[in-house]
Image: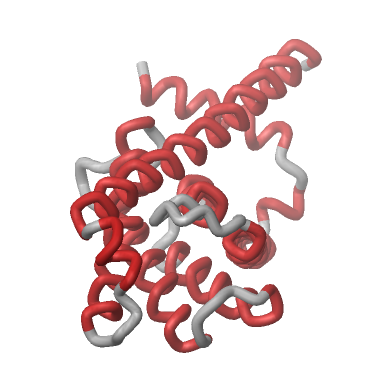
Length: 203
């Protein structure tokens, strides 16, 4: 049943897809540009998020675009590319910390998304897969911050809130980012199905 629906969707896409989309080079270029765009959106979300004093709360605005990118572009390195792009865009947008730190922080988060989404029993395109990917990626980012904090004097947030509470907040906000990303993907998928249905009726 699922295989049949996939075949029908693929045949429908071939009917409505423009000729330039059949060119592998053009499609790859557009996918890369899409991922760069998602990295820019992530950087913007991080930059505009108001300081709330709640660890991990900004992930709804920056991790969600990265989840969306990995949901739509199922290719190795998609998360790393978005993480690196986010760090680079973060320079003109005024994200705190230096470039190398941000490359490590968001690059590691993107790598975690790539690895988690590639696990055999994980499908980032379903609800639980998206939640799992969001949580694990955010926890990798949390671990990166904890490691950096333990080797520096900037530890006041962890002393005030505690590592356990901060970790739970990162889990919750990571799950939220995965959930929002999945809902956006499902809305797009439903819209595409309706478009394909209308195209089939017009044939």
